[in-house]
Image (spheres, rainbow, N blue to C red):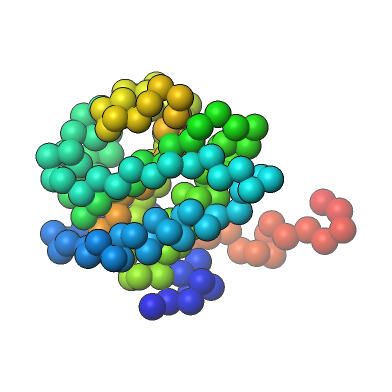
Length: 164
């Protein structure tokens, strides 16, 4: 298993997966890491729906109108939130924890936007979420079938000390 720093340095958005399944204990550990994210005033507004059924995974890109790679993932997670003053921030922190936990396990993942995309309510409803919850993100996870190399901006180009 990779350390947190190693996972941050190596994580990339993965959109191609092998057909190898992922065991339930690993899935639960990844989602548990999402649950442990920082949250404003410990509000914890999130709910997580794990989708593993191939027919259900295949239905998601049809609802989105893109992200066909989700159909080939081992699983995906819908990150939903109840109304909260910091719902987006809190659930984005949980989503990032989920991505890093997947990377630490040597898995690939890709974050797909939820709110405020027009498809978000239909996706949430399709998987039984009550109307009181908002879809914040969708994360596909699987064994990577690609290893993209993305160049990040150098730290020296964006780090400012004391003033801009």
